Length: 574
Ligand code: ATP
Ligand code: MG
Image (cartoon, rainbow, N blue to C red; front, top):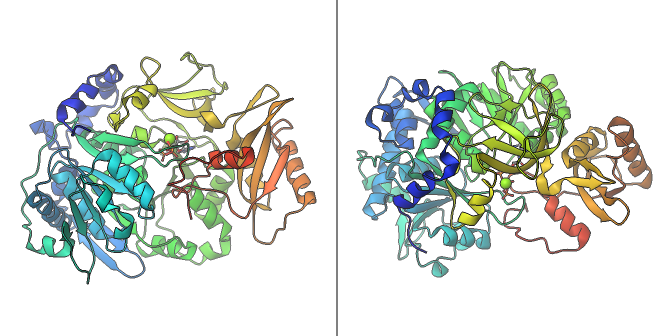
């Protein structure tokens, strides 16, 4: 594989997919947004500079940028300290000869060092590749090989999962830890940081230069390497303001791991571009610890995911009543459809509506959202944010009327749109198969008020007796039943009906599987939703297969059902 060059990025940027970009910039009132940024004056850009250094060089120098805790460590860092530490790491990389366009991966549990490293990589113009810490060897190898990474920042305990011998391009392994023996090609993170200078000559980039390479969650198949560029900051900053509603003194917590796009776009870039205080929690999920985190730091804005909200809901309302969450003023969700039941629960326990937001790795930033100032319809993912245009298209690319289910598409382009799929230009072009549109792969409909309603992945939509049924609607009804903890719904081929609906269900504690319960649940959907959407078959499972980012993997349910190979499983939970 030839190495990364800026010319190749430029070639992508000039493709027809970008033709509406300048027009969109007008709609977003970019001038106002961009005037905040230093690069507006210089024409040169660096995400890490605008997120950290710009504040460190202002009156925010001593403001807390990062509160970190994981049960063992509890630390805080000011914007000034974040600047120095990321500068140091930038120098460590420079000394290794790493710079512009090189891919440098991060494979470690959350820690302050992870964030110093991420920012340092960006400061020297390299492309950061965050990997989820729980990946096993094959998943790690696939991604490092595909991207031809030159270096990786990791810990001694993660090291056995990196097959260094089989990755000749991977020249440097930077180890974050204590009491280990260094081998050839390895660097001791802490030692190298100590001797590195705090002053760094920043690498000034062009707007279209590569910033970060995220591999998708793998819900639907082999993960794709999605490249984002420095220009994405305009969207991160803007959505941080109008969707996260970040203001000067907010304490913000995004629960996503930086191995997923939410954990960088909204766990790193958006909060720091907006000068907020950012809380990062490491360690495992435990309902009581999460509530304690909200209370302890006086979190005001909280961004999490339906799977987490459902688990908190499952932990019972008594638990939450023991914590003071009165500072909380804005709660958001992403990653999966947010069941109306969860929105109602949130209103009850947090006295807050949970704001659903829709976007994906490929879009780099939020696009369709419930944002402050608009009415929320529980179950809808909201409306396109100002400056974004969305539509439902049929399979020929024609715009459909309200209430018709079809392909959810976004008018091209926006600043945080992916600029390519690494090593896979054909896949990239597929997203833009209808002139002027980005086709998401999700299926949805729009109502007469312009709200969008998620129905499922296009591949997941069920066609039963000529009716198109979105699995999410059925799953949402199912989890309203008191016995149901989680549900995954698929279409099962049927000679008569085309497909019939089959539901896989995990029961709440205290309920036992029985034929009677099955019948009761079917009746519940029939009367509460519709007869044609009621499952014809129900199978109880202890657990549903989920990605590590918490999404139900319907393709695995389908493969089980049809006795087919399950395909790429690198992102499945334990
Ligand atoms: P892969 O593309 O590898 O199959 P993935 O699509 O799960 O993985 P992500 O980019 O992390 O990887 O997830 C984006 C997808 O998550 C969206 O396309 C959509 O299906 C789902 N999603 C995200 N937010 C929402 C939401 N608010 N409502 C419904 N679905 C959502
Ligand atoms: Mg996807």
